[in-house]
Length: 102
Image 1 (cartoon, rainbow, N blue to C red):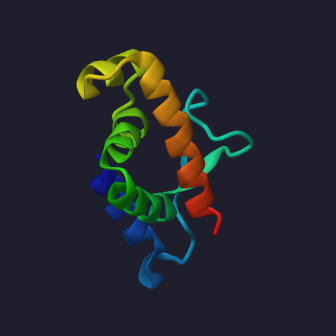
Image 2 (cartoon, rainbow, N blue to C red):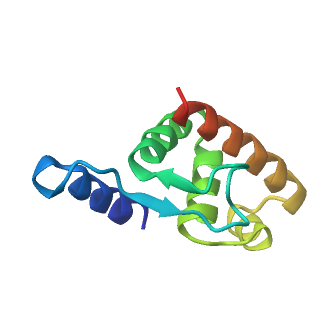
């Protein structure tokens, strides 16, 4: 799903289709505070950087953001406790926010 959305955003950002960036509304439960939409290309770059730093957190973001999984569902997939997943989710969101606002 991530790659489909990123390819779609790239095609809409290209000059022949208009230079406006495609914005995707975040689910309110997943939104970074005071941030209502996400530039998918910046998110993809930040996720690629996170993948290099911590592959499990990158997978967590993909499951939560692109897969729409809840904390409990994602903890089952990743085979970690919900409490650990919540901590990693908070760290991953902070990392992505920092990378996207450079």
